[in-house]
Length: 242
Image (cartoon, rainbow, N blue to C red; front, side, top):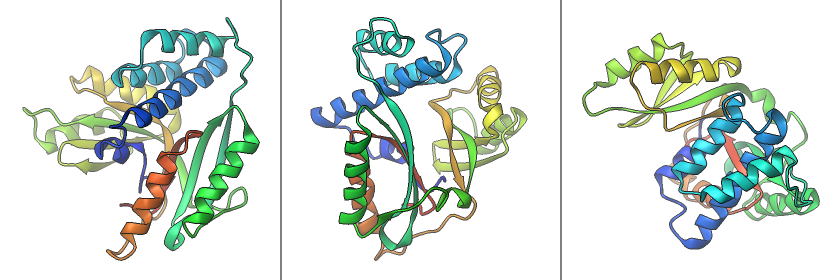
């Protein structure tokens, strides 16, 4: 679901304060731990881990934090804290559909907090597949437009690299959509073509994206901010763009 994701969050510079910065660091190190646990602690052979580490470095997460998260995920120097990746589905303000990806060391706490965010903003969590059927699992790659290239040139390059589709996030960044199994391959081809990649991950793409009215937008913005400020929420996608 491309209506909203942390890319829009980054664009709005949501993590300006120290508290939000600490929250961001926690989310990123948890992503590293989960990736290392699933595919091993070598970023060269674990694409998901390499992406998580690249994002953490770009956000200035200290190297010690990154190394410790990799060791934790690999079972080296385990601190006894077990992390679990959970997907929630629900409906926010004005019926907007959401898929929530959480990483937590306490499932009961995460479920309670996420349910509270939905209920206090006029929404509700749904059952499994209440929202997932509205979307496709895809790869998302963010490619900044170089100053010396036109939008048409960037679009041609990413299409040649194997993009299934693309959407401009703003005048300077294009979201490249790939098949889930082709995320790594397309990313490498884009970089080989001389373009930078600022983000790459598996996500969701809504089969039908809705645009909120001016009256609906404030409630959705407030809901997005509440989701972003919830520590256990790693990422989220919606079928309604803001």
